[in-house]
Length: 218
Length: 218
Image (tube, rainbow over all chains, first blue to last red):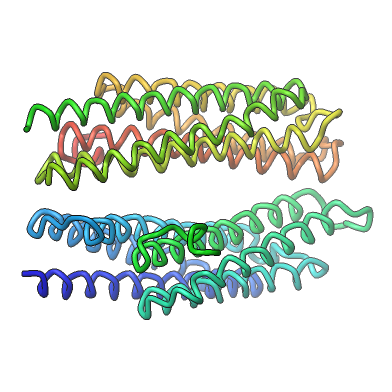
């Protein structure tokens, strides 16, 4: 019984890692749509989000089945509940990628991101994508060390966000209000993707150590 | 045993309703700080958020205790897991109120919201606050009818958000990029508070009926 339980739990974590890979693709393609202005790529991100939603439902169903049939206690119980939370956050990261893709689509045939802030947005997107990529392997390998390191990538995101505001609000800004609003919202979306990545990584730390990251020295 | 379980579950829902009332206060005061530019009110929202975080931890602890000691199955299990999710969303609504308060604080001694969009922001805030208020009683009374009606308040929020963009992007806008960015982000924060309110209400529907709102005709 216990062995079957742990097999099912492992399968659930593989499913979570699989969803995380889909989210990574969504972040990458949403950014590509944003920087290229290609509406077909934007559409592909928007329509692929259904698959992420369905994958989330499957993880939720198997979590409930596990809870009902196996009645786990203590750390096993906390692991299943953590998985339920992780899958909600991963789904939300998919939604945020859709928001990025929708800004790209809204501005076709133009680009939402004007030249002067392009490097900052590219870097934000790269940081977010890298964080999501690392979360997949953190889930698969239960890599606590990298999970704890992930919080520092989040700091770079905060700096990038401040840098983007400095650009928008400088007297040199000549791209108008619409572009500024797009950049502010894009910054918010990438920042939230990063926040959720850190949060999912922290839940892996909790699952493995039984303690929240702050208590184990993050 | 079952009776004790249901007493504890009732207590948990009373705690959730209490957190929801704290969130309602946070939304109200954050808006007051925003529209008055009073930094003391903004600070009070920011510092009160710790109480919401601690209240969330208490609900989480009692949910785990219930799961461990009572080993609920079927609908009881789903109710406890739903409570865990509701408390996460309520905490997030508190965080979003803090974001509103921080924009207010950042612009002191000025006001973040210029005159022409003041009515839209006031209305957004009123819709959000009303939704949070209704969620408290939806939780306490298990009021399915109002929970299903809440989705329509969310539609008004979408309309207000579009109206705010129309103002910012009109050729008459003479308040610059900074104010436009603030308004776009404020709109996003109030919209997210509304989204979470609908989501919490939907979870109450699920707890009572065992079905997700779309299936029962929302």
